[in-house]
Image (cartoon, rainbow, N blue to C red; front, side, top):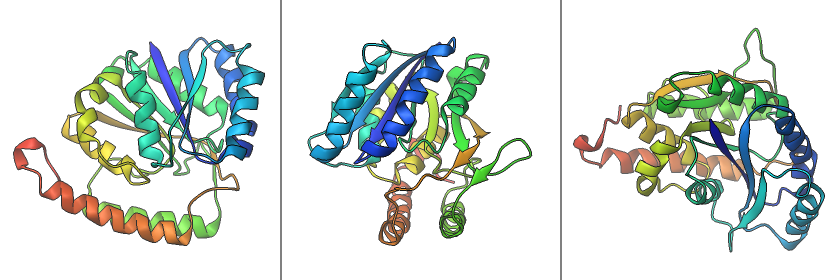
Length: 252
């Protein structure tokens, strides 16, 4: 099974430098077939310098690490992910993971390895989850946790997905689904996960929420203003999808 893993980056030079070497090392030690690529979502020259330095350090050692895709300007996390997926969809499974390292390399290897063993992988959407279980641990600031719970409550009023944590930054899905639905995935920023899950639900993909160990890393882009915008975007997305013809799928 071949994976493509996009790492969307917007001014993530410092955090990516802490994450990418460990990820490449963990993947190299595994039996997985994974192509890894940085997608630069219009970062500043300072952070682009970090990306270049990282590539110079790692490129000769890890053949599965592709040269970055650079977007001309900041278009949003969804736009960055989809740019990578569109250029690399001749694989079995497409994935993305946040550059902050909140989902550590061993966790990424563990999840991808479990997918390889799943006989129904070609019909399954895998969504990592930050909901603590008896086998996983989640560490996040209290304020961020409250914001996450508030967003989850509102999302559940609008979209009845079987996935509880829709915003965790690590997801894997069949490349065939993306090839067939690429033109219908129009959300480009933080809310893109919701539309992606909605389209996958419409297509009849099995939803597999995978609990992971998750540790909050300082330096995130989510602010109070962004959170308010996220709630507005969620309502806007619901309104847009409700206007679609019922024959195009089910909005529950």
